[in-house]
Amino acid sequence: MTQAISKRRESIYQQIGGAEGVGQLVETFCSILETTEVGKPVYLLHLRGHGMAHARMEQFNFFSGMFGGPKLYAEKWGHSNVRQIHAHVDISESVSQAWLTSMSMALDKLAYSPELKQQLMQSFTDMAAILVRQSQS
Image (cartoon, rainbow, N blue to C red; front, side):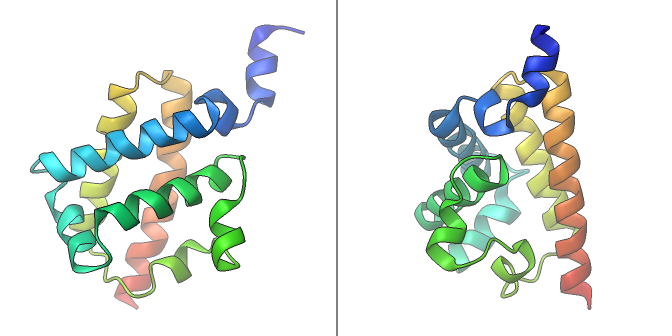
């Protein structure tokens, strides 16, 4: 079996280093939200909610399951439906783009492979489009 085939069978959770890798992604992403102009709109939304400490914890829980690891968010809340999770938040196109740009910056800082980054960004972009449409309805 070639290494490329083996990599494709690994979950994203495994590819990024399990719980430690998810933690690094969340920390890198949240740091970008807190310290850059591009991340500021998303950061301010979190401050109006439960704050960044809560966001870090729940994002770790959600990404863990989303990436093929333990389904921590669903175990805690009984679901991992991204629409339900964000139902209380009005997400504009500009906030969505700020989130996506900040996540792209985080993935670049963590030096993920171009293939993995593309796969993740496609998933995040699809999710963001759903949340913007939800907010516009």
